[in-house]
Length: 350
Image (cartoon, rainbow, N blue to C red; front, top):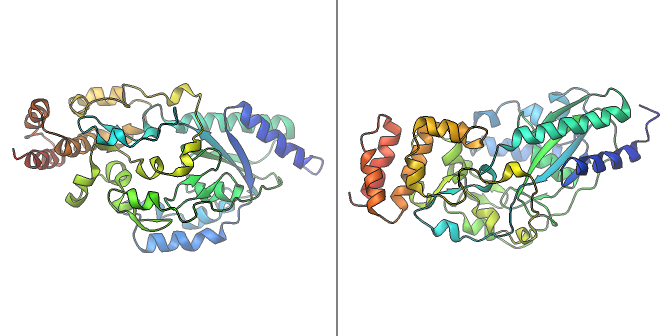
């Protein structure tokens, strides 16, 4: 290791990352001391809700070298996923159509990024010989936004998303933990300033304060993480959002610099960027399994899928098609689905 030209290796790693389709590679150390107290307070306030995994392995989250002993550096990677620079809120007003968070319209990014990170590790190994590493893509107790912020990929904005001055926030993150003592990059400054567009737009007022999210009020949490009944106070604000919520990113001024992707895997499948609620509500259990294969949507299961769409149908403008669809599921075998369908019917005075 002492014979390696580490500054040159760091430059090579960034070039190899670009060749592999990453828009940015940056390197940081493993000292997350400045983030530990924020995480502790967030958990103490139970803002994580049913996401018990966030409260577990706290030491490993805050100390990457405990997650992978011997880790000295984290190679952070950014991959853009936006297909266009249109950040209009108009799709949220098309009440008969479903709104699926942009990141979930195509194939699941986890496998794609993990394979690319592995290929990057292979390139490094070709140059250095055997070295210690492990790739992560939202797959372990990793504070990925903290590490990405420390590395200089961006800053954690008031909406808790990582924001990059040149690319906005529509991107995925992945990491390579390594025992290579590479030179580290400089952290960026916060550039949110006095802007509070993201805080003000939130339909459920989930932001307790700038950079502090009560996940139990967040539509992404309600439609993806929660497996129980959605609290009634949040059903109307959900609008037509059936999987995730992008509002706080859509209004972020920095997303006028949105970086566009060339990855075919991120192209919407099954018209998930332009499809009616009724059509999705009529998917059978088997159709759901087939059409969400390789999609992040699969993880919520068919029952929660119908639950979410039922709420959206309750918020839509009533039509004969919507009434027929809801009435057909009024006695659904699932108590969870049945409850939300009945709520939707009640919203329409049916």
